[in-house]
Length: 235
Image (cartoon, rainbow, N blue to C red; front, side, top):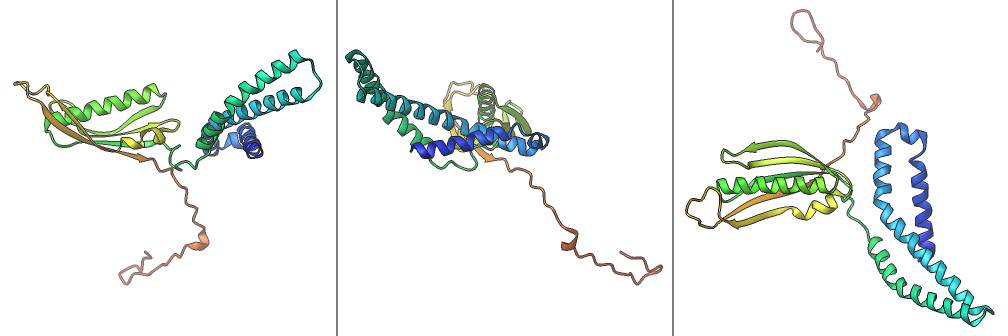
């Protein structure tokens, strides 16, 4: 595992160095892509450095035990080696989990669509509650929510609302919100205190990046026709 982690850290350091390259800095789109990639890899890189540091300290403690040192020094090294050995299994398990293949969409920004379902006006109010909850959560995560479109209900809330959220690992943390959400409560529109069940649907979609299509002039066929009408104009 050590060799694999060292290669991983070398690649991470190369990626970090690229972010300081003037050519990369001049290309905003490429810089943004690499910055996101570096941000995504940082937790694994930090854990890898911690693991390699622990292993190195463990090796050094073992060397002290093998060498001709005084009993007090060996006792200290034995205690240190024991403490380090206790940390190794947990670190290895964390690394194994972190190195599992990630969803390729996890780093993407998202579009969220909320639609009121069964429950009439109360469902629209519930949809509004969900919208405010997600916006507040995004703000706490230091993400940037941005409303795209909304159809408000007369009694408050939304018939439907869509919004964009930009930030780090947004899709990875929000993708499981997709589905039908249900609430049972006494609506503000209920005068007799009866409990109503209302629903709203939530769709979380990874935002597709703009793709520039380069069409070469040699791939185009331009046909010119002469009209049969007066003037013989080309169209």
